Length: 281
Image (cartoon, rainbow, N blue to C red):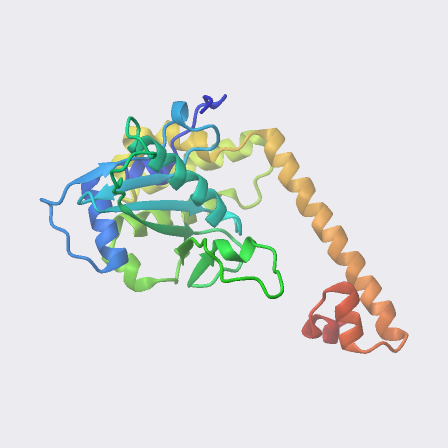
């Protein structure tokens, strides 16, 4: 595989859980397992020089029998099962390096498990399952699917999955850290303002013992990863404005259709607005 052109920046989530003991504890809390400290954990996260594309957040094997891939997202991405399919394929490829898949010996692989932690601003269920099969084209009369990948997704925003957050202090502190950063961002628009907000968030978290050890050691790395470039920020802002403009146009169209006597069902069909949204017009 070709070497990726840009180095992956370690984010706070990856840095926090880049530790076998923390990963063992996190997996026990997620799967209700009881692996002890004697159980070996090997970190197998893809490295930049091995994978042509964004590096995955966390991958590790536990007891040599299970390989766990964990991703963190602050935006909703329905393509996560597909991305994880690429990641696990690349990891397996590295694991069997030097072995022949054409030989008579059966190559044994650790069974995979996939998890996603979400803490973005958009509405997201407390817990859900994302499936690769949702991306496949629907074919009438087709045979049963022979390929599937399921991702257990958890919302770790404040107020969600309290039992899990209470069990895992690291995950809870990470969620609190993101919440502090988000609050500091409110109203900040320029590159300089965003940078200042990040630094203030890191300082506040250290003072309140939120990820203190991590931020004291890797604060600058974390800030650099959280801080998007001004060009990226402008693109995000423009996209939001375009979406709002599109939504306003749909509302105006629906309003005109309603005035012309079309039913709610007809308006929904043409605009995609829900009956509740139409009722409010």
